[in-house]
Length: 264
View (cartoon, rainbow, N blue to C red):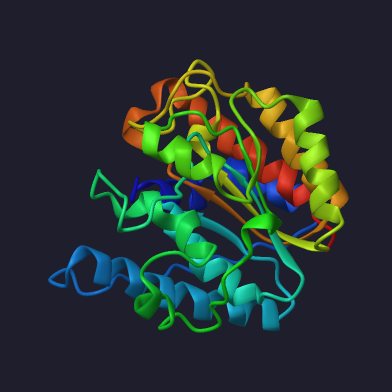
């Protein structure tokens, strides 16, 4: 998935779609960290650098659209745009809601939303410039479906609002309505494996039972209509598993939806 951001950022069709919405596109790539550092230290190091880049972009009046290999990038993007009146709309087949005490996979990326809402890795999170946890009650998690029993139990015991699986539009609208009563700005997070695997295979974790691309696209555009989108991210794309560039096509469409839907 680390190859995904470069592939997306260099795709001329995707960039042309963004420009067609009236945006000027500038590309800024976060430089690698020391590969001899431990994995978690490397990820947090990249997050710190990305947080500074996002903050700089916002200060210049730009809209940050982040292409990232993993979902932990959310910590950087939300830190960069600032926590004031900020909520989250998160599309993902997985909850990414584990903390270190309960995680069974050893996969750091499944902790992104937990860290964003203030659970786990407190000392490391505090090294991220501008990081402030987002309350669980200010998060809508949609398309989630691929869960272990302990993950489902954790999610059901949380204050997150969910519209699972294929995304029932009434459930999604109800959650969005509730979120509008709490925040005005949102961070929009689209993990491409939120799309049903029959429409696009974003990575090796892709799962059946999710929304078709058309439904996801409708939901993304609806979020842009209802909120000031402070920043957005498209994550978790593995080009090596993209049969016929179907996932690339999905990413192009989602990027275009965001570009046309966000108010400059």
